[in-house]
Length: 493
Image (cartoon, rainbow, N blue to C red; front, side, top):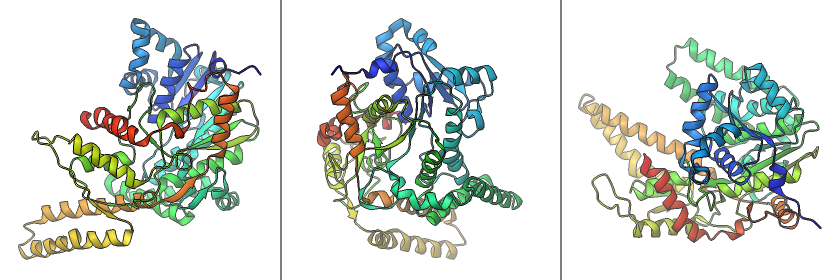
């Protein structure tokens, strides 16, 4: 049997990418331009007021990044002209109809030419304001789907979700929609969009009538998001709004070819375009950064829990192969892209790697002194963590409150500062608790089938490898991930 070509499929294709300034979207753009320069065009939808602003944003926040170093070296003096020919910065926004593309001629051109849509737009903040999370993660998906239906030559709509739409489940989590079946039945009984929009408007109008400050509005809308998520059975605003986005997409897709990719925790590049590139702090990276600076002496985590993570370039490879394998099929399929089933790593091992790394390569503080790291204290339950916080911080804070009152609020600024910091820590711990104590393993039979199809049917299986079994986690942490985090994020702040 003659093998097919992934690069051959991508040749002369026109692709729309939303969320291209995000970590995953950016790595996808770089990969496509590097491995298939004969792609016809990449439209990048960017939040901007006009074409010039969109182009400036593309140059500063995407093309100008170190991620594009290999591509820039490959093209040399012709790099700028190559980008100008292949990439179009489109001012728009997924929160609007027609994706906010105001220019009629451009919109018509896009609807005529686009064959593939990658929707990676989303806000990943666990406690984002409810109005913002809804508009991007939920209703933004509807707007992308609506636009996709207008694209005359569309072969594929690929939507990036998250494996954690499952909520707080345990055991083997299936690669399907079963975790949302009850919710899907519920929201199809009424117009979810109208209901939630009305609730959001009522809440905002109520705050406006109270002359609430922007800070109060933000805090209230964040709390409202958590409240709505928990009402429907999800732990936070992020996974709730992503879950509803999935439901609405499947419910309204009609005959479109739709793929849903559910990555787990996405980490720095494994190999491409070079190892260790990362943008910003990715979940566990905040813990690593605080730990190496000596600011994290205790942690709520089950050491034996599996932490499901996957390098970003592997996710991009899975996206690309899924596009090619499922193009022009009037069906939908879900892929879990992670490592917990095929190549699990637990928190105990991660902690060991991080401890060993920073013992050998200590962080140098602002005074030029190496920071000595300790093993730290691990709390396996929220109850024991709360007890520790009560004794270690909350009781002394109550003492400070009493002294402050006795001395005519002489220590008021100090008290307020400590109180705010403590509240922030407890909020963050409560947000991350479901993941630090997560007991689920993500089934990836669909993804494994896709890997098998890639090996058996396509010539470029190595170029688009996304098999987590090939990752040596110790080597990845000790020589790739932590060094990359330091170089590309921590030392630039």
